[in-house]
Image (cartoon, rainbow, N blue to C red; front, side):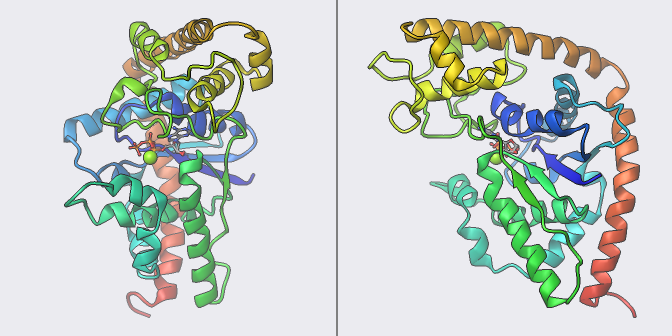
Length: 330
Ligand code: ATP
Ligand code: MG
């Protein structure tokens, strides 16, 4: 089985954007690939985190993966926490030594996350190298992600190639990003020029998977649209409305064309109400499963099994790379 790998930072509570770009793809592919699904908790501390909230968000992320449909009973499903495996950071150091700093400060995400900020951590520049290490340690071929992380997967490809060329061997497999056709960039409901993010300061434009029905309705009904009143998919001129159609498609399984046809001649209010109903139905079902999972021992069992399995693979790869670069004794 080929390997597929992805992770969602526990930098906050997971959103419908994270579902769309990350979790949904894992669920679609989980039967056909050996799946490495982890919680990149070390990425979350690129910005300050409250330790208790971080612990809580880690467990909550795993609970949500499973509640959304990740099947922990599959033999080929490996769930684990990044910081419980020491090889991620060790490989990252080796790869960092091969990465020009300018390559990191030119990244879109670096620019976005440091805009108008002072005193930000060096890790905000270097975390894509840690992400490359997360991927390359396991020879993952496919990396499902939203569009925002595509550039980081490309860095992982560059690093794999650079390492293989410098040390003349097939040390790392070239990973490929897997971006969904629809829903690769769910936009902020209030400011559709931005992507929806779990760590956004203003949460009015973000729907969290654990939001109450009341909040879901309020946020959808208050979403920014436009004034021409025509239901049409046009991301450039109607980004807010197109975003609602995209979310509708992601959660209903209908194509955007089918949704446009369904709401032909209707007002935006009607579309919003129907979308709010759909999200409430889907998210309350996820929340009910989540509650049960959080009270059971499913999470710990899955994480223990995942840690044991993935640590072995990571150790082997790291030892090979460590020797290859000349660390330690001959
Ligand atoms: P943060 O604000 O802390 O960066 P985030 O919401 O951007 O959080 P990440 O943990 O950075 O989430 O990303 C987890 C996964 O979710 C990645 O695969 C990323 O591409 C995807 N993703 C994040 N936001 C969106 C979005 N708005 N639409 C689609 N996919 C998204
Ligand atoms: Mg992000």
